[in-house]
Image 1 (spheres, rainbow, N blue to C red):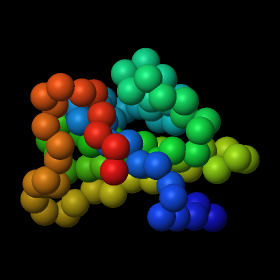
Image 2 (image 1 turned 180 degrees about the vertical axis):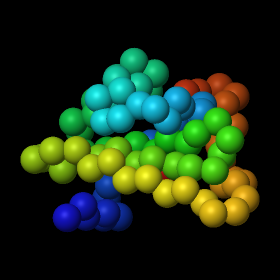
Image 3 (image 1 turned 90 degrees about the vertical axis):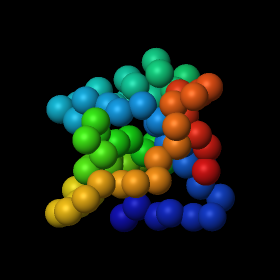
Image 4 (image 1 turned 60 degrees about the vertical axis):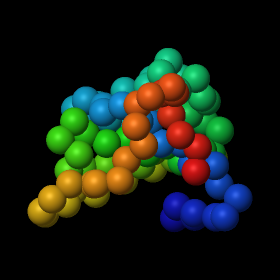
Length: 90
């Protein structure tokens, strides 16, 4: 089970990501775009270009969790802007 704690670091990728990517592709984005270790236990949050879907990638010490949420209507309205940094830490 994936546990989300108050101490967990959360990084939001501000740029849209190609959602054909799976665990390996998103882990590569973590390393190359976000300059972060995907095995660190950090929760990484990505969104698609249309803003209708997000994916969460987390390593729990045994393997990766990849969770996806697709809205049936509308878009994720509040997303950090791309100005300045490739990610925002929550």
